[in-house]
View (cartoon, rainbow, N blue to C red):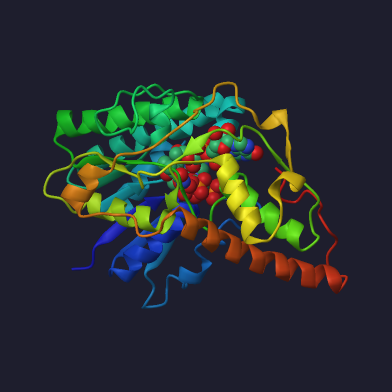
Length: 346
Ligand code: NAP
Ligand code: F7E
């Protein structure tokens, strides 16, 4: 029997890797997408065949985590075996600017999904995209499943709410609801306003004369950065266990934003200090200074380990962004595009 998965956030970084992997495993994948005035499906276009084609494995449905009725209807229509709730306003800095919207999507959105499952078929397995941001002002290092939470942003507070809702639906209704507590994970598909991609995009554009400067905030922040494709494999493993549970997914290694920038510019034979400037606009009202995960439970129970390490991750992102910059340079040289000096400086 073909297994069906419903994925919210399918147009995002993780959604695209997860959809690829599920299709590869033989799943029929259904994704929730938001209507927008421009296409937002760039990361999954390569997977999409018209739904009337017999071999189609990916089906897209309009909806929004803010629309509970729509989610319930979709749950009934798709009748999935597994649900992966990856949809979110996932930018921490933006959550300070839009706290109520962020809470609606990140916190109540999860509750709407859980209710839709409970009403439709409580046997559906549910994955919640929990985050290391929940540890915030960390009380111990490394952080594991037993480390207390101290969230430091509207986004992180919303994720703590969702984490506990998932636990409560597991305990109250015997539902198979789990969290992956994922530490930062990046890739060539990472959104361009997250710091890693902002750096690799800017450095490669600077290399090709398409950008002058890179403006950053706190260079001292330290993160445990892994590769998104490794982490989406962990999401699937979490839903294949006999009993539902929560797992930290991390590499166990931490590096500063400064180190990430240094490594990126070094790969391009550039001196990062000549090109990077401080901009106080990128400082946050409350900062998460350091995160480092202990994924020994996932290693032991899921048999999961990260395949891509820090140096390889930076190289992968630089290589991909250099290719993008070369394409942009060709268009500029042909007079088909003008240079957007601060294109990646957001
Ligand atoms: P992302 O690239 O920002 O993707 C977010 C996805 O959520 C997009 O598909 C977006 O759709 C969708 N979305 C936003 N608002 C929505 C709404 N109101 N209704 C329905 N969908 C909505 O995020 P990601 O990096 O793939 O992360 C996936 C999930 O893991 C998120 O929940 C994030 O908070 C969580 N997480 C991420 C990390 C990380 O390091 N990447 C770590 C821990 C947890 P559009 O394309 O239309 O904007
Ligand atoms: O910031 C610092 C910034 O925005 C990392 C999301 O996927 O991972 C992500 O959240 C660090 C912070 O990611 C800039 O202050 C300096 O300390 O790349 P980021 P994040 O906030 O860690 C977690 C696990 C999630 O769950 C989230 O969804 O870098 N930083 N200068 C900067 N950050 C940005 N964005 N831009 C800068 O210019």
